[in-house]
Amino acid sequence: MSRYLNPKSDLLFKKIFGGHPELLKSFLNAFLPLPEDGLIESLEYLSPENVPEIPNFDKYSVVDVRCYDKQQRHFIVEMQMYWSKYFMQRLLFNAASVYVRQLKITENYKNLNTVYGLAVVAETFSENTDWFHHYRMVHTKNNATIKDDIQLVLLELPKFQPKTLTEKKLAILWLKFLTEIDETTRDIDPALLAVPEINKAVALIEEAAYTPQELDLYLRSWDAIRTKKMFLDDKLEENFEKGIEKGIEKGIEQGIEQGIEQGIEQGIEQGIKKGIKKGIKKGGEERAYKIATTLLLKGMDVTFVSESTGLDLATVLKIQATLDL
Image 1: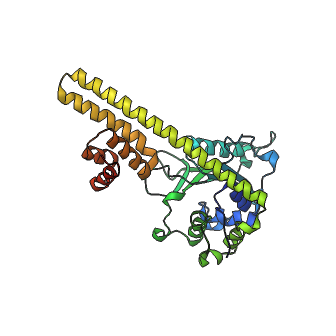
Image 2 (image 1 turned 180 degrees about the vertical axis):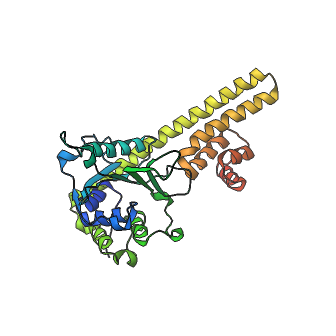
Image 3 (image 1 turned 135 degrees about the vertical axis):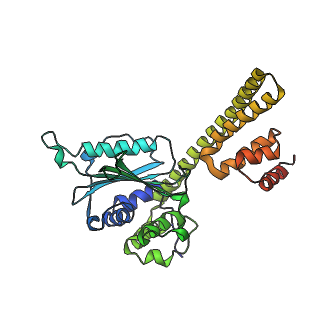
């Protein structure tokens, strides 16, 4: 029975899409907002001298592939393991750099061609339910006036729910490939194998296709990813604790200024809730559980914890029971 590796790793993502243009073409045609008569027919990878010299600040969390097609449209494809509030600027900067470098000094601006930046993001970064995000320049008063020279597309993997989608089948199958296959997978969905490009991608992630040295690099890359996540979680926890303490202090100060007990209580509650909102905004439900646990250990009322974290009262009571309070 075959064993498989996780295609989201930097090693495998680069191997699949950085070395096989026919697979990258299928992937881009599935997700980019291209007109039906403007699908990518073939791709060429950008040569090193045409790639902007932007240092990769974390080779284990970001990996990109750059190419262009016969119409001279340029494409940047990235696998992003962690979300940062500045990642959008990074993607736009990279796309803009490719856009600018199309022209030689003596060439005219009419020779500039569209650049697409496509990022596959392994973390949740938005509050809405959409997993597909498309950005382009639109006139603020006339939506029909559009500049498509630089377009960004972000795929929010954690929100992908194949059973609820009505999008084109190829996009669904590529997302299933990225989200459903890992080291525990033993059987591949026949629907994936029925697509020649995805079938080839599946073959590229079979463990047997890798040398012991490559497997060691694969494991070390995931260890680096887990280590970074651990430090990020620790920092988030530290900032949350500071936010709670600062919120309580500020609330007390505001309450004292009002000079009445009710004002003190309202000030404390307002300060705490502000700290909670900052702490819970990025981490989602898992973060809500951690915050609820912290508040309960600090002696907060279960009703207040429920209202502040968005967890139902029964769930908060279960958490409290596990803490033996």
